[in-house]
Image (cartoon, rainbow, N blue to C red; front, side, top):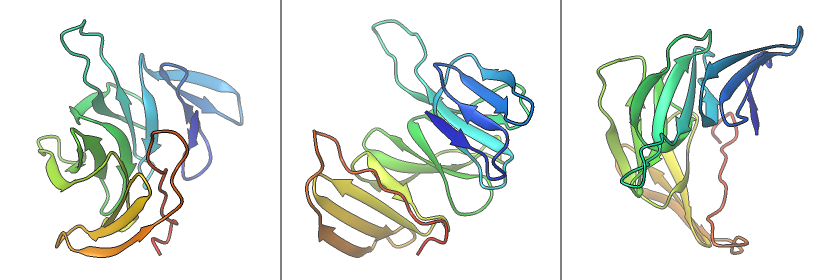
Length: 173
């Protein structure tokens, strides 16, 4: 699975670890020894990713990490997965324990904030004002600031047991 930066180069991908490929020269560098589900920040400064540490049978909760796009030491952010950048610079949304959370990764002492209890399939609008989520065939859009339901509808049920993949247009409309 691959995700490209806003500029298109380099390309970050996850073959069990987090790697960056400079497309023009073909140079590959390892950013993190393990990682999956990566996402570039809109300003291109950060790459968020999740990974499952090897902690034995007692616990292997997925962790959310960030690393500077230029490389360096990955920084632990929170317990969670499925990073989504939205809203102000540094604002990262993610799923953890049956809910959507957000944290500002530009602030190294920031604490996670609960946004909404919802199914694990969600997407934050690019402006960070709305959260869309799906539960089987029910789609909902909630205003984050007020928690108010803005829209809800029923769609054809997804195949399998998973929710629907949701993606906002870059304009957020």
